[in-house]
Amino acid sequence: MNKIIENDLKKILTYIKLNKLKNKTILLTGSNGLIGSFLVQLVFYLNKIGYNIKLLGYSKNSAKYYLKYVLSDNSDNNIKLFASDLVYEKFKNLPKIDYIIHAATYAQPRKFLEDKLTTIALNTLVLKKLLDIAKINSSSVLFLSSSEIYGQPPSNDINPISESYNGSCSTISTRAPYIESKRLGETICDIYRKEEKVDVKIVRVSSIYGPGIDIRDKRVLGEFINKALNKKVIDLLDEGKQIRTWCYISDTIIMLLYILLYGKDFIYNVAGKSDISILGLAQLIGKYTNVPVKIPKKKKELDYIKDAPIHIQIDISKIVNESMYYNFVPIEEGIKRFVEWNEAVLNLKN
Image (cartoon, rainbow, N blue to C red; front, side):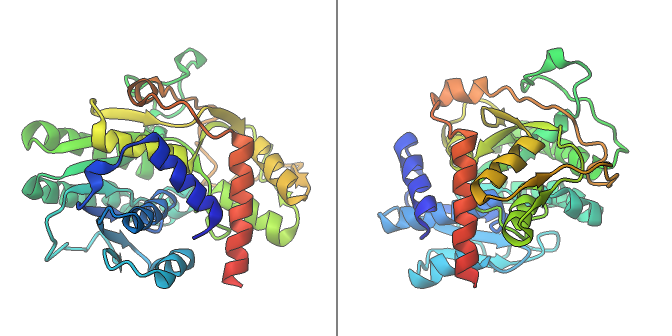
């Protein structure tokens, strides 16, 4: 197992008790994604120290090469990863499911614009199938929504945005298939919570980063690391003024698992404490890879950039006060680990 990942996993065990997961079965969708792949590695690590967790991981494609590497050298028969189109997956012959984490989504703007209807189905129809499984099994469910459901606040006075803000979004914007299906997914969760008594929690995650975003990822950090390692220059598509609250992956996992296992409320924001622009991220990656950053003279008008909010700041006081977790990874350190992990994975692949 990669040393950076291993150290992150050890930190997780330092800050949250995971005894509730011992001898339990987890159904995880999106097992190839940033959050999903990290959870797979966490379960592998926990099982090595006696947790005996069974994990059923579903993703549209077969397991990523770095996950195959981890699992092949140290077999864990409790972890089963399936390549499946979740829209058509019937989830037959399942064992008793204790926890469901629905992390499957097209979060990459290019991807959800290429396949809008599947994006909608993942956040609604697939979610309903999982909630039906939860109803039968009395499972606890975690639905990964997004801070994008808030849209661009009409006033900066609303920042930082708390869970009580209802959002300012258009149903026909370029990003609407992703945003509006997340919003509808939250409504479906609320119906199952109130009418079917399913134990379901919603997390509105914001700008997660770290090991697991590799050079093939079409989101901004994947593009940057790809350009840095292969082109030896990070050329931006615009001035990179958009500001986000970035959260390192291990911090994200600690908050997600706390909410799943101990959360007292229904909806939580999950984000970091590092507000930084896209340009700032590029410059950090450039610093650690020793490559220049270039700003274009003319902005490129691309569909997946259009309608993106300029400045989103997320209020995480609810989860921080509940979990008493304050030890967030600084953005400089997180980006350093992100670069080093990608360099190690690139060597592994080669």
